[in-house]
Length: 396
Image (tube, rainbow, N blue to C red; front, side, top):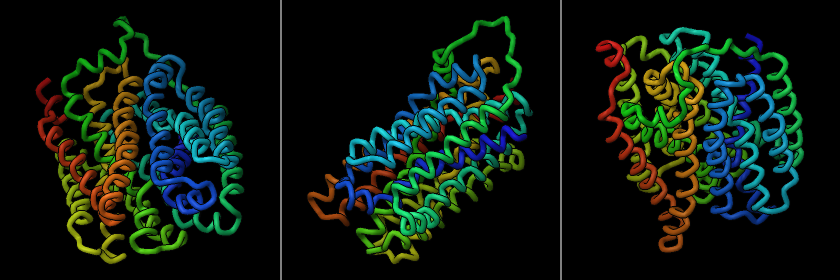
């Protein structure tokens, strides 16, 4: 239990680091001369490196175990990356730092999922993983108003150095307290990620994993701050307050999704209906003419809440993964989720800047929400043809 709690602290940090740029954006623009594209590339670097790391991490989890995999990467890459961030003198250094932090955070959630999959029943996996994600998503909350207040009080560099020390301490805690499960001895071939790509059912789940998280993470972690500053003139503290509500909705949404597959006996339809509601919330931002702060806040809260179907989608995909490929299976699913977030965030910067050059910032943000709606809508079309994991087991 102590090991799981320590991993939860590391996941709080992971959630914090993927979203704290939304609050830091104004000060980084002012002090380092960062542009919207620089910041979207920095945010995307976290996600893309995080996603790319899933392939070796899956192999390390199956062969080495979660203790060293999570502890060492968080110590050297996570703590080292935020130290580099705190000392940055240019936008390029921010991008490199965010890439390192992404590598450090990459194994922490998968380490916990690996322990849940190996030590608990299949039926309890969704509830355990959703609860872990829900409580861990409170790291998003720390990256809103509390972060804004700390920056105002101490300065962003001092806050960065304090985070580096705390990240290193959490990594040491993982190495000291996490216990690896016994390895599975099997007469089958060891298998590889290529075996997972041969499972046709997974291909209908990959797109929605990429899209649903990408929409919520991009708005919360990158665009909420610039949008609220440019379109509504909010200060750093006021941005922190709005993003606080969205971050809280992300946590509550994860907790709400968690037990629903056991209550209703389906995973596909819970995720499908939830992401339809996500699409509707994004369309509000597309269709609303000059929305008030209250309307924007409610739309952001809905995007956060309904965009939290990650654990249910991971559980849906994991049901098709053979036991001896558990580590590689959950990290492959996570690759599509986080990789989608990185690609969408990188693309979104160019979407906004291109539209803004021709029609001003209002046109840029309108293009952003149209882009997000299109990404989620296309993914939902693919997901509608997926096989429900419960139905698959019934036929077996």
